[in-house]
Image (tube, rainbow, N blue to C red; front, top):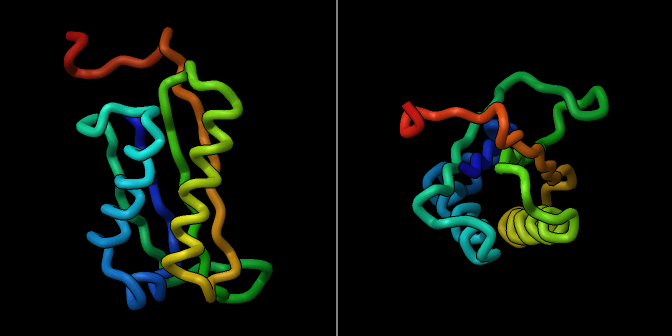
Length: 114
């Protein structure tokens, strides 16, 4: 926890390799001091077939899943920091966004809890 899942047009990876993109988002997430660095998970899903406004325009959307407990202000700052970094990396891409979903502590379970 947390998970940063970057969905993007495959053409994005022609501008920046996947490892560099993952590391950039990892660094931004860690810089917020909201997460333990070793807990941050980042991955990319790229798509060859997609539509944005019924056109094939490049896009980046980060779906973020974190454990509940952060304030709305903290989550908004995290989203802004990630989108700002992506905008710096890809200034010509018009469609860059992020959203955050909270995991519910009461229903979350992982292997270490066995």
